[in-house]
Image (cartoon, rainbow, N blue to C red; front, side, top):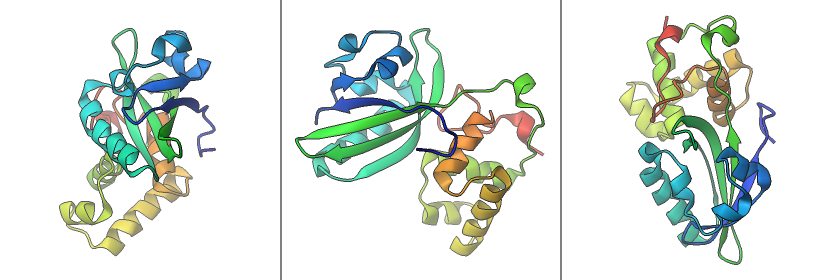
Length: 193
């Protein structure tokens, strides 16, 4: 289902973003049985730093009644910690949204093995792509042409062994390149060249 072969966990939401169904694995992320998540707003499960922005996005998807989004997010865990995750939401008939989460494991420097040296430009690109910044805005922000931006993203995708932006972000998270405690995503300083 994705480039990192991680497990995806599923929940169904109503148009008010309340959980109507969650599989056992989805609820296990938050340390409760599935029935305790029913009728809770999915935004309660997201880190406060991302819940407002992603709430707007999910609400727009619910209003449209069609479409799909894929983005990175931060989950609030029962112990008060935050953890990165990939989130995909799909609007379906009968006024429902299906949300899938893929929790991205954070690797400590000891577990990472060889570090990847990133230039300042590479780090800025990764951070912006992970935050969902549109291509044209990103090109303007970094003073690059659209083609120049696509060149750098393609080079980074090859370096990481992935085929698209979603894979690039997932690989960056699973490699531990992003700090696990902040949003928008920030590359950990030890990876900067």
